[in-house]
Length: 258
Image (cartoon, rainbow, N blue to C red; front, top):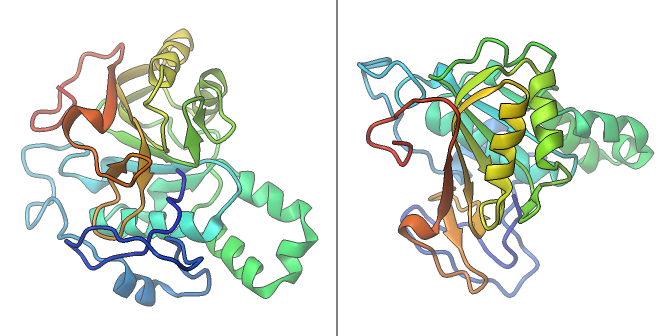
């Protein structure tokens, strides 16, 4: 996921506005969870008073939602994304992980350990998104959804080729998944989702759908699914996300995955 330059957070329901300062859409790395909730508006839980309802999958049951962060950069921004994801959908802390790149980079760089601001950001990130283990995704089924968040381009999220990402997910135990949502800018603009589907299939991993934004994915406070073009004009409808049907026959009525 790329941070759109010169964009400020706006009150819920407002349109994004440009800024002439260097301020970007980031969350203070030293802010605690309470202050972040004041900054990041959240919607009511999607399941309301009916925790599981008739749809015991990711649409109604937050236990079936999972978040994986890739890469080591921009810890404060991705910490804010994870907090918003956790609070908006009431996702259990045990379902939020990273690929471990942040932890590896932290142990290599003295500046992150000696600079109080950087240390707070990175240590907060590692606490919120601990490194995924070999069996982290072994229990997932067609009822589950995995959101993968990272900076991205047409070539894919951060430095992950389709083969490398499929290999990483296989190493984390993934054998079946209903939805993979690549929350990274531009990843849906070319054929990366299709390549990833092929790479997962080659490893015997069953996947229902793979989705990715076709342009900038903007981390706005009011709508973290806002996809905009280079002029910051929001896209609508099918111009927002590319959806690729996978090798697993599954449907999620009321969503784009049908």
